Amino acid sequence: MRNYIPFLSSAPTIAVVRLSGVIGGRTRGGLNDGGIGPALDKAFKRGKPVAVALEISSPGGSPVQSSLIGARIRRLAEEKNIPVFAFVEDVAASGGYWLAAAADEIYADPSSIVGSIGVISASFGAHEFINRHGIERRVYTAGQSKSMLDPFRPEQTEDVERLKTLLTDIHGNFIDHIKSRRGGKLATDTDLFTGEIWLAKRATELGLIDGVGHLRPILKDRFGDKIQFRRYGAKKGFLSRFGAQVIGDAVDSIEERAAYAQFGL
Image (cartoon, rainbow, N blue to C red; front, side, top):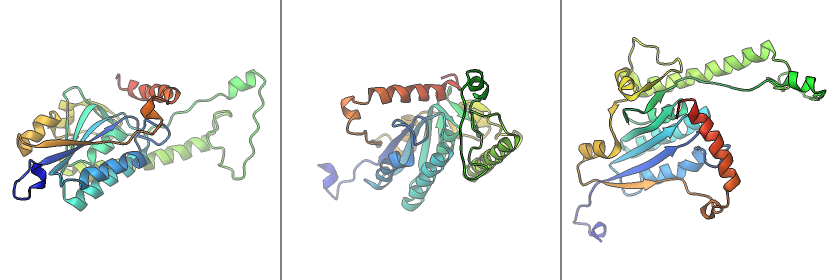
């Protein structure tokens, strides 16, 4: 009732959006701009929040989806003139750190993993296996590069060179984003773009984050004890609300665990 009485001031509100999971559009549980975008829009536009807080726990994933989500956060923040705070939980690595860097300030738990500013492409080679078992591979293409890096044929030097060029260009985009967002905060005596990871204390020293701390204490210290937190998140699909996605959930879980495992999580 208090919010409907114009001459009574209400407590300031902080919108909280959770960005958790592998970044990409292939799995139902993954983070992508289409799924989390509406929640971000509401977080910035409803109730005139004094700030938006991002709870981040992601090992990374798609560079394009990372860029789309990060760009949406910056666009909304600038349109509404609202500060953004990122709070890292287990990990903000690779694309996860891209999202964190979209915030104006970044904080993390002492044991949070931060960094991995690099790009990776992983595949496999099965041509010897299929040859050994008498399996004939038949591929027909129009365009000499259409079957680039086909795992069922021997690796081609020219394919690897083309892939490395793509990875280098994407890495350059990542570096440009971090430099534009963190600016003069970054340490100049350490190469921060090798794909290395750090815990929060060292990440603070390197300028990758702004400090060690948790969401509620930091934001209450900044905006006062009377602040209210309002949470926003992506909507679940109709079937998943009734537990009808058991097989899909199992597959998603395996893929996500594999992504987190590289950081010992």
